[in-house]
Image (tube, rainbow, N blue to C red; front, side, top):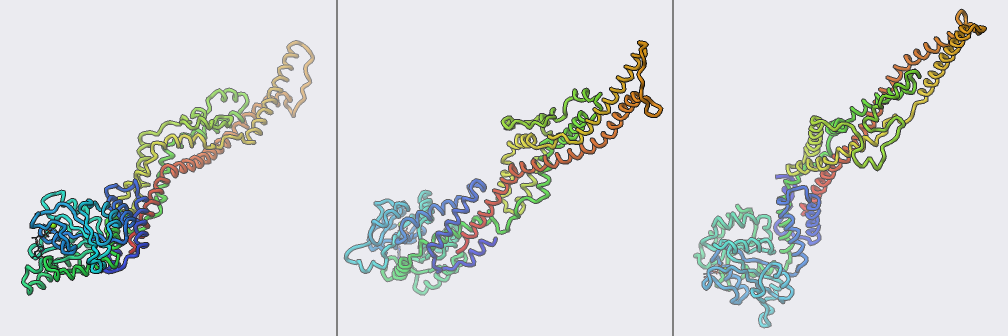
Length: 561
Ligand SMILES: Nc1nc2c(ncn2[C@@H]2O[C@H](COP(=O)(O)OP(=O)(O)O)[C@@H](O)[C@H]2O)c(=O)[nH]1
Ligand SMILES: [Mg+2]
């Protein structure tokens, strides 16, 4: 048995007064519990709590000045006789005339008007309602003013409808007087099916051994002791136990004064509901448990999720393309001008994925509402890895929760699975991959390449001109010399060599820079993908964990008596 139920039992005392405000606060806590777990726990487990909240609200709203007491028992125990004797009216048909009574009769002490709403709710038909108030004996009966006494059908009736009616009414009344007789007081049915079930309502339970006159006087204490022992076994230690004789007014004194006390205290309705809250809380206890849950999924599970999301989103393919695109674009900007144009003809690797192209144009925000990129769809392996990672997140998050919750946590983790692919795609499309700006050094190297190429072209032109003049027999150009070599030759060969040299020197730098850009893009993409994971997987899980915490706190408040 877990802590909350344990606490309920610890503080349970038979004649403790129940404060109406405290009871209302406990009922509110049950209501908060129901709100917190709505849609998360199986409805079937919550029926008693819903019933309680509904019933208690109505009972408290109806009349707190009335106390509804039911006479319950097996056929022939003397319920109707006790009812008639207390009411001092021949109201309810006694068994001699009609062996079973299938309808509930009510007798109201005091004006009927105030009690009518209560009786409507309880479901006693107006023609079965009686008033015990007459000018003649008003004074005798004032002590019972506010009492509504019910004569219930027999709980062992062969008619199922009678038994259902009894069960229904036992759920509504403020106090139950269990009537047993010397022959049947030890019957299994009353103890197993009824009295034991009422152990949390000990303080609104009263047991009478009726027909005491049928026992030899010396036998009465022995039977009472035996019955007391049985009640102890039922968990009803300490409930008042009286001997009555319905056919003799003297044999009714004890019961009458017990009812007068109940009416005077005006506690029965509150105590009954407090007992109901105890029962409901004890029933809900295992749904919530007492262990404080961990704050959420652990880092290992989250890292696993982020890796799986990155895989499913195609982050490796995109970063690979980023690296290649950097090399492509850097090559086009800094390469040897003679082959640059040819490079430009080749498609840009990022363009092929419909990611920002060479000019750095971002995806159109309107377009990005639909699948925005042509990054390859996740493979079956990536999809199942993602499924497993989500499962792991849910399992870790729900590890400390009672058995009813992991299912809700898993559903929450998977709740937006269908939206994930689009969200990931939009995120990839919207991530700045770091290729927008052309680095300054590209322009410097590119400029240098143009310069040395220009030198080579000038040298070539110069040489061609010299040959042409010579071929036409015109006076040759007077080539300035650089050391032993003519300047145009220096320009041509030097320009060509320098171009190749710059290209050769630039290549490793481009490779290195491409890897850096790739690493940075990977970092950004991973961070953005993790945000998607947080929004689509972790946030719903956190909401369920929050609901769990609320439910747990609410139930703790509801348990506080
Ligand atoms: N001697 C005696 N007979 C009783 C007593 N109470 C009820 N009876 C009789 O027991 C029979 C059944 O009583 P009834 O009130 O109809 O029982 P119910 O089925 O529980 O309503 C009737 O014949 C009553 O007269 C009692 O205290 N003493
Ligand atoms: Mg009867």
